[in-house]
Length: 126
Figure 1: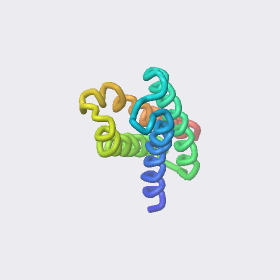
Figure 2 (figure 1 turned 90 degrees about the vertical axis):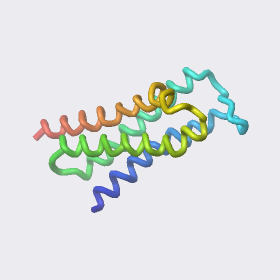
Figure 3 (figure 1 turned 60 degrees about the vertical axis):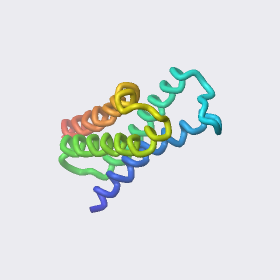
Figure 4 (figure 1 turned 135 degrees about the vertical axis):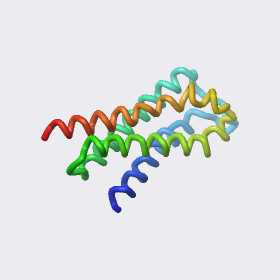
């Protein structure tokens, strides 16, 4: 049971860390304080680094079925990020669903790509 709770908690943190960091780039009125392309680059880098670090910590407690675990954790975190964005980010931004998926949502596919790569590497290490 602990593994499932850790999966959900780390998935939430993978969403929360870049979300909280993004708030520092907006004024109280909701205006972005830097160039939009720089902002998106920073968010992709921060999101990737924080997810990678969380994945390393997550996999430290896994001792078998690494590939399967990579798929499970990657899809779980992908789902958590999409759901939280649909509930919080889209209403805050006023962005359409189509714009969201083309500008942000697809970027979350990096998470399962990283988790499956880690799972594959650990599986092949045996």
